[in-house]
Image 1 (cartoon, rainbow, N blue to C red):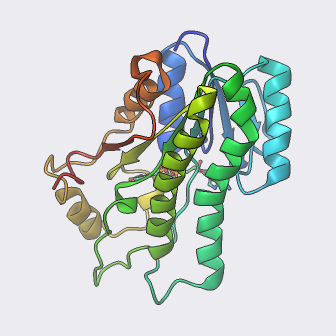
Image 2: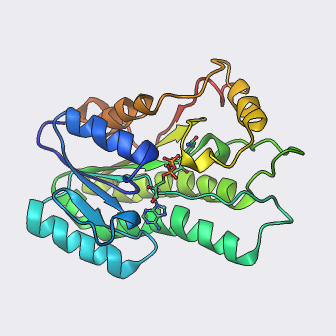
Amino acid sequence: MEDKVVLVTGAARGLGAAVAEHLAAAGARVIRTDHAFTGHEEQGKIALDVTSTASWERCAEMVREEFGRLDVLVNNAGISSRADLLTTSDEDFDRVLRVNVWGVWRGIKTFADDLAAVRGCVVNVGSVYGASTAPVSEISPSSVAYQASKAAVHQITKVASVELASRGVRVNAVLPGVFRTALLADLPEAELSRRVQRAPMGRPGELSELGPVVAFLADEASSFVTGALVPVDGGHLAA
Ligand code: NAD
């Protein structure tokens, strides 16, 4: 990753922060972005709300001015709404889709020319729950908007890989299983452990276990890989 310029969305905490840390340790010049950085911008940190066109454009201007290029876009920012099919509100459904789907599409649209200029790549963060269903349980509702949004992220990954291949841009996704982050903080422990047990490896992922897979997809090592959905899930999807 030496000297590659990488932008990670949703990098203030959780998996985004861990991925950013891994890529930086591998030698990349990492731009951490998050809507939580508003008012706290400093070296290598940019306020970016992925739901706003103006915010994406402003971020792109700053990246072009400061770094002059972008090699890798990691679309990681994501939210959930813990409500199932019949209890999700109209507003929550829109909110989740806006961040998780629209935000990914808008990021690719914003930086497509910059990435094509250096034959760069995109790594999206999908989910095992975009390729299988989360358990419906009495102790915790599932998350219809979240699951639908992640299936859409997987499809955007494939569509973008097809449309951008001729411009030299690869587009892939990682599909995390269960990782203990704030995203799951509202899940009762019994439900969390039930989800963990669905994966044959029987444990949650360590935050440090996603970065190396993102790095592989962002590096020349994967130069013939595009449109791939790569589970990082302890075997969850295989089972
Ligand atoms: P998290 O809640 O710890 O981190 C999400 C980050 O996204 C936060 O820093 C938050 O401020 C940021 N964010 C939210 N809305 C934003 C917006 N509008 N603009 C910019 N940034 C915004 O959760 P996490 O678990 O680290 O999730 C990271 C990604 O991994 C998400 O896409 C999530 O769906 C995915 N994922 C997580 C798991 C898991 O088990 N934790 C499993 C599968 C997929």
